[in-house]
Length: 325
Image (tube, rainbow, N blue to C red):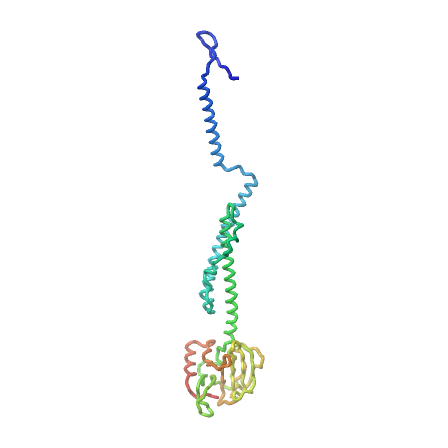
């Protein structure tokens, strides 16, 4: 029931009922509705722009997410450093190691390829931070594959280095006698005058003069195949098998300092200079064989002489003179 209002009429000395017009009532009602709608809209705007009230569990999850983002950022920074190291290693591998061992370089298209399977990362999609996780995972996969390829390449290089290291040790690379003054070379490889027949014939090695009893050295690592005087003309002689198709022979020795089957290293004393067999005087006749064929020993002297010394020895060895055997 609507409340009735009165006012006091001083002229008539009586209370008179107030009559409210219907139009005014409607205006008041509309004004109230408009004010209510405006208030509701303001509350709605305020709510959508104000963070919701977090529960302790929500706050914990938020902190964990922020911590994970930080860890991902640190991880990506570490991967930047690893990428730099990997790039430097790849460059050294392609431009130094593989060149040295005469191996083709590994192209970047293979090193940097990553994984092609599009389904590999499907389970990482559809989350709030999917792109961060996806990019980081792809970087890890790409880097892991690049490092696996590099590891395989270095295994190959290590194997080649091991073989080449053994080869370098096996090659008969030094002179068989001490020759500091470079005057020990009496005759070289090639056609020479035979000291007994005075006929020009092939001389299959080099003759080094030295006093009887001077040490004779193994010119490369290997196994003594023979130490006897069974070969005609060589007298007491030693044959060393170095591997990789190489053999060396030391002839006209006065005595041995090794036995068949013995492992020797470059520089070991295997015997002593003499003049046994078909020899005109104390010297060491030295030969190098490669795959069963005689080759010029001069081509292998790099272990204990300089370039200038090599030229001097080469000049003496290439003179077509008389050999000593």
